[in-house]
Length: 103
Image (cartoon, rainbow, N blue to C red; front, side):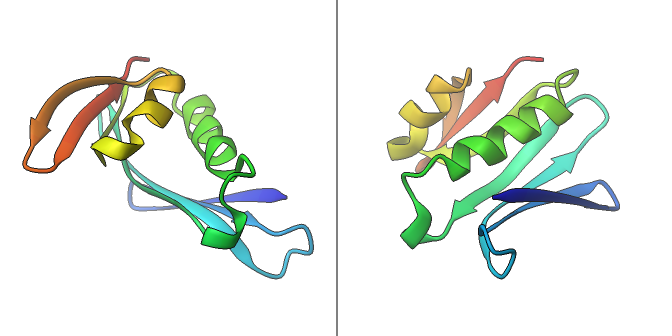
C-alpha cells in the first residue's frame, strides 16, 4: 500500500491506496500551525481496519512533523490506540479528550 501526501494552505492530506492503486482505503488530515500540528482526522475504511493502515498513516504524520507537537481531539474509546503511539491526554471537552504527542 502506498501513502500519498498533498498540501494546500497549511492543510496536509495523506491518502493510503490499496495494493492496486485503485481505491483510497485510509486518509489523514493535519492542519499545520506555527508551533504545533493538529490531527483533524484519521480514517480507515471499515473493510481495511485492523491491518495497520491507521498506524502507517499516523507514523507518516509523526515522521513528517517530528519537530512539532501533534495535537488532536479524540473519543475516549480511541485513547488507548493513541497512547500506544506516544500521545498523552491533557484535557477534555464534552465527549472528546484532548491529546498531545510532544515533538
